Structures are given as structure tokens and as C-alpha cells.
Image (tube, rainbow over all chains, first blue to last red; front, side, top):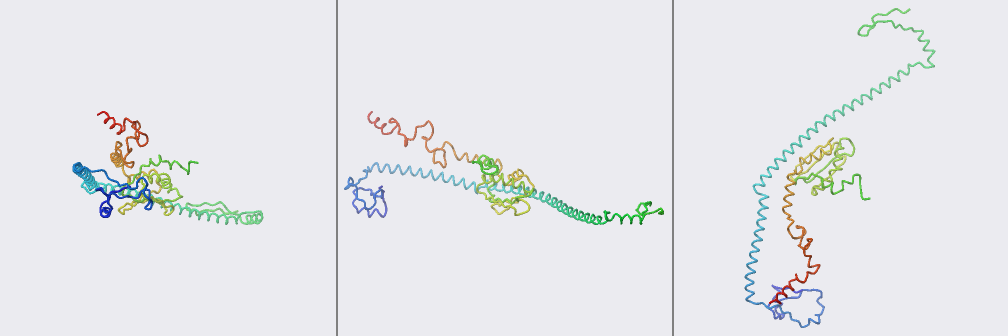
Length: 195
Length: 172
């Protein structure tokens, strides 16, 4: 609630008649500016505890020494940390390590590259096979189509119940001779005479 | 129902901890291009389904993106922080092979991981007392069998400073 003040506001507060050596000003606690002072505190003048000058001197000296040593130790440790960090980031060991890592990385990248090449070869073979498959299928479809055409053609020459009489007449009119010999090329060589 | 999805084991912490791919610090972005149909993409699909959660859990600062049906063949691409791009072809591969391959080329090795774990253990000494962020305990009163915190339960009279000084003063 009360703060020790120093600096500019000291001059102003000194006018307001405090009898003590140390100046204290009120920091707003629970009450606002307009609230009156409590009845039990009206007329109260706060006096800080008296200071023994001899003790003050001794304490000041001892505290000064102590704080100096502590500050020195803290800075020492901080510096050690910073030095370690610096060594790790940009020391000779770090360079060595970085070089090592770059080397290993290159090796691994080459490995990966080889693997990719291998997959590429396999893929080319596979794609080739698939293309051939597709071609073959097309060819087969065409063949099938032709066969169907052939069948349709043949169907025209079939003997049906209507054609029966006519075809019998034709067969009787045109006797066929099956007695012939062929040579190796398939040409007819000899043929008997039809009786 | 507590279980969500087709393989809810993928969502358990135990499964995620089992992931063993920890990327090197250089890897920043990982991209997976794969197809939703087709026999050749099967390995990539399984990889995305089973292994990506583990990878993302172990590498929380790596951006992982999945692209579907953009290219005829599946592949992985890694973008390192010096601009280098690493392409890994995964057409027709099994998801186990894919993960092993990735671990070999871009993952931290076992020994590196162990060294890091050791360093971390050395930094955090369990015997230290301090803020929760750095130490296990803040005060000895938190340990079982020790004097409880005087902030919660009053100390016995004989242990308080004022009683002791009173007794010492009364003695003289």
C-alpha cells in the first residue's frame, strides 16, 4: 500500500512535512481518492523504524560486498553458458560435424536416386507390357469381328427347308469328283474321269 | 460409442508413440501424391492410412500434405530447408518398405535419437526443486512422508520459530 519514492516526486513530497528521513507515499489500495481517512487513523503520522548509523554503515558494507560477489558469480555462469552455446554453434567441432552430415546426406540422396532409377526401369517395362496387351486385345477384337462376318457369309449358303429341293436338284445336276491326287504344294496332279 | 473410424487403434497414444520415423531438422515439408483407385497405389494408400499419423505425431513441426488423383503414379516429395527437394517413387511398393526407405534416407538414426534422449535426461535432474516447467517438485512438502506444507496445515508448536525463541529466551 505504501511505496518508497525517489526522484522527481521526492522534492514535491518533501514539502508535505514528513518528520521522517525516508519518504513514503500512499499507493491506492481498497479506497478511492474521495474516500475519507478511517476514524482510527485520523491524525496518524507514520514514522519508519529508527536507523542506527553504525549498524547502517556496517550493513551497507557487508551487503555491498555480498551483492558484488553474487553478481560476479551470476555473470560468470551466464558467460560460461554463452561460450558453450557459441562453441557448439560455430566451433571447429561443429564444422566437422556439419561436414560429416553433409557427406552422409549426399550418400543417402544417391541411394534414393538409384532406387528411383530402378523403379523407373521397372515402370518402363510394365508400361511396355501394358501397351502390348492393349494392342493384342485390339487385334483380337478385330479378329473376332472378322470371324463373325465370316459366319454371317456362311449362313447365306446354308441348306434350309426352303432351299432343300432346289439344292438337291443342283447337287444332282453337278456331280463332283473327289478322286484326285495333289503334290506337296497342294496343286492337283492327277484326276480320274467322272463317269 | 467410444471408438470412431475403421481402425480406431490409429488414434491411441500407444500406437502413435510406436512410430519410429523422426525426421532430421532439415526436413520442413512432406508431400504425398497418391491415387484412390488402382493396384499400384495400394502401398501408398496404406502408408497414408497407417503411418502418416505416427509421422505427424513425432514431427509436429513438419507440414504434411496429401494430394489425391493428381498424377498417374504415386510418389513422396520432401522439401528441405536449403531448397533441396527429395523425390521418392513409391509405385507398387509395400507400405512397410516405403516407411523403411523414408526412415533410411531422411530419418534420424537410432544412435542420434538415443544421444538426444540422454542429453535431455541430463538437463533435467529429478533431484532439483524449482518451477514446474523445469523440475518435478517445487518444495519438499510435496513429497510423501515429509512435513506437510505449513501454508495448509499448521506446524506443531515445537517446530515454529516464535515458540523456539520464547523457550530460548525463557531459559536464559
